Image (cartoon, rainbow, N blue to C red; front, side):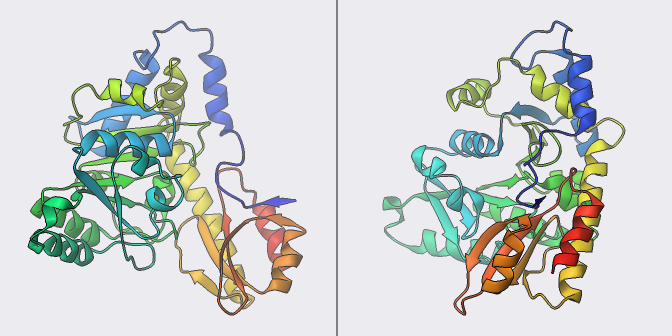
Length: 341
């Protein structure tokens, strides 16, 4: 069976496992006060071009999203997201469970535009009854989006400006950030992204690590008692070194970027093969998630040989599906799948 189900169906990149084994018997304090976490934190500051950045390592993406949103927002505030946004669709209502509404606005190709956000906020404050409504206090986006698409530098800059105009924070979910930044279609660097938001995270779970995300406040400003909030949300690891060692390894000798580039190269081969064989694209993704449309017959045939995700049924009876590449995808897996088409 070929596996294209997601980018975290395998364990971890061998170089991360090697580093975990090498450091296993070195005694260090817990809760992220170890030397490995300190080293990873400094490497991320350098990669982000943000020497004053505050960096905190959390267990996973949902925990990172929940902790950031529930900590930065006041009780009366809500978070704006695209209607396809992960926090509104695939996180089991975690944000609403914390008491903060997710305001879903229509996106295009998975992206939220600055104009849409500005229109909503102007309408909100023009409403004489807005004191009875949840106040927009943050905009959440992901880079890449749920459809594998990318925000441009100009789009991100405009979103950040609109957030500032209305007193909101811009939060970027970077669960797959390594794939986004390594895409040939991406027109920004990590420092440029860091300069155009208030908080973001560098994903590890989906980019070669066993688990973990690196949360970055690029200009400082981490909320007071943030560690306490992390623990309340169940996102703190007693053996914090587990996360520190992994991120230290990811940002040693360019491993993080190597993983991203490799997965993108294989995804582009897969995409080209689908197009060449006449399979229509559901989304024109330049990243490691590829979305195609299959007939019922094609779907049945491929399911016998490959694992992939059913994304959405279409009105004409066809189905949009997702194939994902990762650090563990082999070139021969791509070749075999293309022969099956």
